[in-house]
Amino acid sequence: MPEGIEFLYNYYMTSTKPKLLISACLTGEKCRYDGQIIYNRQAELLAQNYTLVPVCPEMLGGLPVPRPAAEIESGGGDDVIDGRSRVLTTSGDNVTEYFVRGAFKTLEIAQKNEILGAILKSKSPSCGVTTINVKGQPSRGEGVTAALLRRHKINVEEID
Ligand code: SF4
Image 1 (tube, protein in one colour):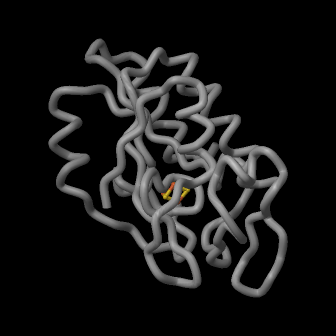
Image 2 (tube, helix red, strand yellow):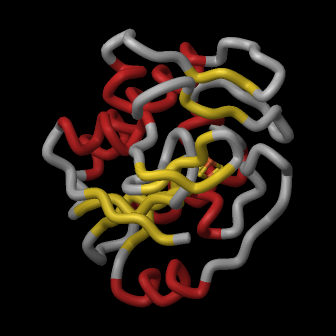
């Protein structure tokens, strides 16, 4: 786990507000594939009432920042988890194992923390809940981590 995220994770573990898992990039962590830091007002508002547990599935899976953009080859997260599809970078490298490993590590953190649900980043091949990018364009679909959490009865919502 990156040092910054580990610090946030340990800090939030001590708080008493109900817990929500959240895509770490939405909290301003530098974990996006392109190394950019994004600011999300909705995440800031959620933090007033909930303990946010930030996770970045792709970094938990072992990928660095920055890293090449990647997309699910066909179908969605369920297809990747079940071995019917792969996650490929734009240059065609197979990064499926990183995405699947990160999804399972995220699930483990979610279960340990007894979260109320998960707020995930739209359009990501890991975190997208209703929308992922296909050939660089937003398309209906679900990322690998979102699919795994949903399979384990965790309520997943997305923000952009
Ligand atoms: Fe990490 Fe998910 Fe944000 Fe991508 S969308 S940087 S996998 S937390």
